[in-house]
Image (cartoon, rainbow, N blue to C red; front, side, top):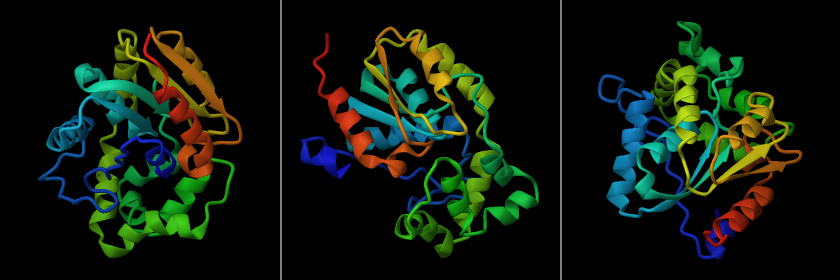
Length: 235
């Protein structure tokens, strides 16, 4: 983000409701479903009055950003998808799926060190403690963070959402970059290659030595690819 900001882009990276330092409402007040998260993102961008935007969506919850783009094409200029579930073949890995298991998930999501295990399971690198601390800190402040994570995982519906995304992208004509870490053990590059064939205006860039959490593994490669794509002149 600092690299892109220096090049004149305004970069905004909100935490999802229930995560990071955003509010953490009880599941009776906020559903934590894909539909609720899409609406929250829509309300957030409307409040900021920043559309149309270049939208960058990464990871399994990046599916929310992709769904937002498909539902609000007039509010999105360019779309970047980084290692996200773009195909029905996408499966939620056990390392994340276990957070939603009854009883076990209740305990695991209250463990501040779970972030270490999840982040490092998605790629080829050991994450620096300073970086891990950023993710870990909210879990040390409130048990509400763990409860929100548990509910989010239980209601994520990767199968249904990824099918909806795959269908929606077939009619999507905005400039789209599939930016894929080749060392992702959860979402192989073959998913991106299949998705690319259905895009009317898409391109694929593969990042060597980068895993699922591309922005953590090699931020410079991600920034360079984003800058090149976002500066392209529309045809």
